[in-house]
Length: 243
Image (cartoon, rainbow, N blue to C red; front, side, top):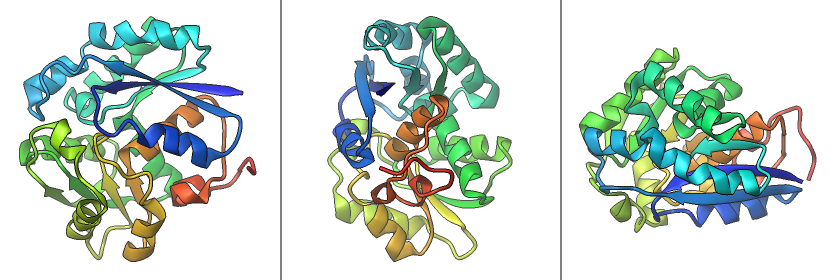
């Protein structure tokens, strides 16, 4: 059994995680601990506070007791708002507090894009424009070219969590561009786990979503590969462990 730990801010789309665990269909356990979200606002100051070291450290003891092998801060905006170097320091601090390998959803996107071997991506963000542009900057610092950013201007994760299939597909369509080799939907408050294969079929390219890449990053940290095509192209890469 491989146990993966995730620190998830508040309550929005956390039901993606048991769904993903089920789709993995192997000896993978997904343990989720909710962190204190503070003020629910896609605003830079609030997002920096949301990912503060003491907020993240508060959840790691439960993950240690569960026997987790790795921990991922399951929040994109609460990591990339610190910038490239600041996000690295955030996960280093988390790793020290947890006593296990650590990462965040922002780095999960970078590693997933590299895994797919693509360099040009389109971003469909639920965030306000200023926050969405910081994600594009973060990707740029990793050497990933962003063809464009579609911002939805939503302030709260709670509102994002109410979005259904129609809104998710509309966001992906609006974000897509002919030159983009993949589409990124970066908000962990967005329910996407049930829609990835259909999104990829419609758009004709890989679609990376926040909760999907977060779990994949946990597997990467634990040195596990799982073939789970129902979670999209990212989970159909070699070498694999057949499930």
